[in-house]
Amino acid sequence: MKKTQFDLEDALRKILPEMVKDKKALEKMVEIIADSIYSNNFGADSNVVESLTGKGDFDEFSIIIHEFLGVFWVSAPEFDDDGYFTSKDDAVAYAEDRYGPFISNYSNDD
Image (tube, rainbow, N blue to C red; front, side, top):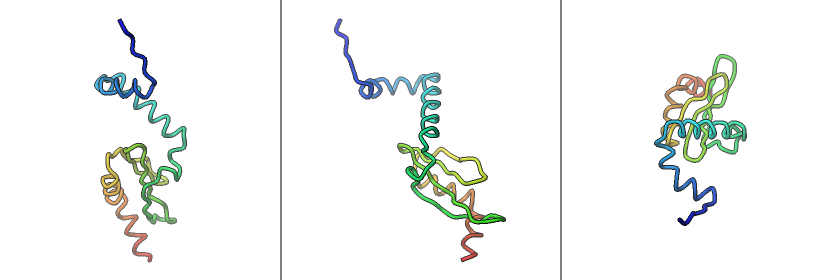
């Protein structure tokens, strides 16, 4: 019996559809990717795809849309991150809805 050897990229490409169907494998992949996002500083400017500005009781703050390989999420200081979305438009629409009063406060100050 011939054994086929792959590099990691090709092995993952071949097995990934089956891994996604397996609940335990999927949970482990999500854990690894989440750890990678946060441990590799993916909250920094390198993954910001859009930024909105809101104004709270004390000062202005940024509402940021982040992306990691086609997955988007929303962050703002003093709030938990929100997401995940599979399109930038969905993430922006969510941010505008969630933070609408803060964005309006900022817009009305101009």
